[in-house]
Image: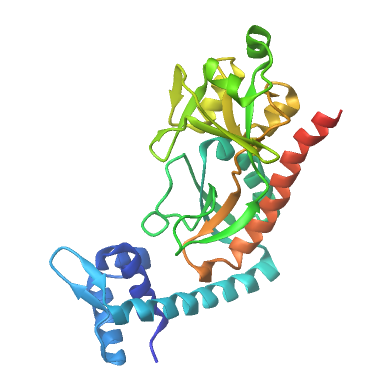
Length: 307
């Protein structure tokens, strides 16, 4: 029977590609980690890694066995966490990454509330629009817009109905007048942000069976979605943002939904986990908490529009 430590060494080494990194994460020596891997290989009667002077990679048997190890260790960790949560509340470290706009302007307050509910919880937050590597960085969960492209990832839905919205400040609308059709957008300057390493300049709108894609340009381009939103509030141009990101601005009148009769592109929000074993326990708790918060945030704009 393999020890839990041996299995932890296998998992950490596979995810980091380094015995030394695995040893540091488990607070043991590299020599002890190496012995644990050899002990596991001897017990299984097969090689788990192909080693060279510069790298390590899983063998076919190692990759197959690793999936079972992930599930087993995940179940053990989540079971222990569930018992702790039942008696003392949610504890341990929450390692989470989030997009800049959502992270700074919504998530910070929500995490404060979560911390009050679970005082023993420790929060490690990465905020930025570069997607974190959940296999190599100290991040367990990530909030991301769009369905996860990596089939190995598990996406837990937070706000599937979310869409992008064309918005501008009241001052901008006073200067340039209303826009009633997507074909009018290209005549105006836009506030652009980077998406996938390039300015997001192809904006798509639909109404009924009609879909129109518009190419836009602008004098303000940034790699930070929060800054793009602030530039739009300042009146520097049209913005095409996630409704969740601009919900507070729409509700307060700092931004206006320029074409309410047209739907922007879908921009569903997911809580992403690196493997299925982590999609329960704390991920499930966080999913339920954030689903409620995000739904309430978007409802603010609906209530405002109906008044």
